[in-house]
Length: 247
Ligand code: NAP
Image (cartoon, rainbow, N blue to C red; front, side, top):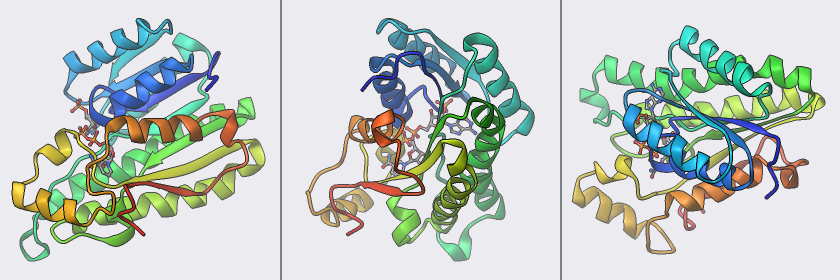
């Protein structure tokens, strides 16, 4: 995968899937600007691991639900590296609970981070990408956004929204050589799934035809492909990386 000379922004790039995406893009030669919400130490470690692969990297504190912070993230990438070629909207949270008892603030917070955050980041980079007549945007959706999941009406709504937003942005930006695609991971081994109760994890495993969890690297390789020139004629698509779960 040749990403030499490209600059990538990866939101929530300090750990989990985001960290694996940063490393995969860096292996291809892209300079990396990753953002974190609270995890400064892991974010700096990931930036260091990218630099060890021979690229430039910066870790920036940015809550993706805050428009001012997102604007500064895009400005930093442009100021430091002069271009924004790739955006991977990876930052995401869960605040699970049953519909009848879900707190409004848990609904709002998940939508603000997963859906509005993705919107704000796409908006912040799109002008520069249009100017460059080049861009690759990859948004992290989820199998839950396609199929739903009990206890996750907030998360499912946010991830289904990401799919609709991805297709709409793809239509708007296609004529400017900017592709916008989504990845819908299934059940991936990260902090997010480690926090699930064991019973729920076991139930989830039985729903995976391949019978095992995915690794963050499985998602990262798909993201790097969609971010590369090998995927130049693919836009508005949702790529499931889920061991067959969404079939
Ligand atoms: P994770 O291990 O919980 O990591 C979440 C990342 O998002 C962290 O880097 C965190 O930064 C960042 N983040 C959270 N809120 C943020 C905010 N407001 N602003 C900026 N960054 C923020 O999650 P993951 O499993 O790697 O998931 C990554 C993405 O894939 C998410 O969008 C998730 O919904 C999606 N996904 C995951 C799975 C799965 O099975 N793991 C399945 C489907 C979809 P800090 O370190 O600073 O907290």
